Length: 447
Image (cartoon, rainbow, N blue to C red; front, side, top):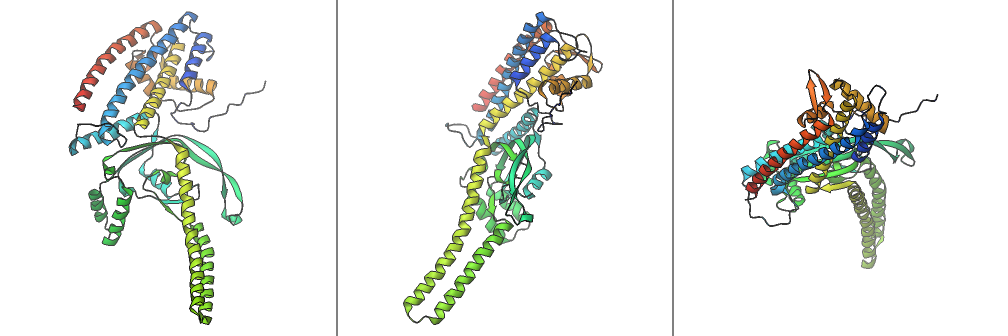
């Protein structure tokens, strides 16, 4: 008998993200509950309960949607004074202390939301390493992190893409195929420093007056909108090479690479030197003013062509950068909040449904959290050919909170479907009361 080869999904190995659509997961759970084919050691669920299980899952999804809608309203209220895209008139003004509290709340809740969606934060060392590594697109970009008051970067899902790159061993004449590591999804949250705060920071770092003037001049050009330091910007991208974080920062500046400097020096330098020699030789033998004018114009043409080459290279790099950002951008500002809430909702639901199904299939048997974890990972590997690090503790905590499981010592057992549906109905009425209280809080914040 030939053994079947299981292809592990390369993007999610040892990660928490479940790369399976909720629809496909529900269909598989319902089918397996009726057929009992998950594993021979699991008991088959009674056929008459299959419809009830489908109904239970629908109720669970409805409750999760209602919870996350409350979450969405709360985040939008906190983001309201910092939203650069707001297009409605508001009579409400916020003091500096209120904005500081709201900013702290927004960053804290967004971090929690990103973790719920199974994103991982890139720490300062990872960001600095990415900024120092050579970019994959042949660009050289500089980023001044001092411009930012606060920056958060979260990524989810890693993968590899194929790319053609030139290499120095062939004198950059040939290309070879290389694997480039990427982040499947990447989110950024950042806020600029105001000019006074930035000036104090740079003086503290010991910048001299001239360099301080240059830095602040560049910063003022960057902040074309005078209120930019009042805003908090949210960005979401897809398929970003791990070494290309520089291009995502709005204060990035293009620089020439070493290869560009060598090429421009070799071509431009030789052309300029040749032009100077021709100019001097013509000038030495020139007698008439017209001859001198022609020599000057010829030299100016050579010099202008070299300057044109420099600007052309800069224009080409800007086009590459703009095209890359257009290709990789997914959403901005309030749209990012909405997208992340949908992703977090999906992850929470998938974890809960898988854990409940595993416990339900075990019938009257109590399972430890480790056993639930192993069976959940085996379920995903068997039916979807993906391997992940299933967050069993988070899943079991949610199930206990919703009254879908009981705990005996260190082991868990699923509540039967009938009782589980009744428990969820009680949670629905509790959620209705909590939504009313949230509405009162939001009304106060709008007043």
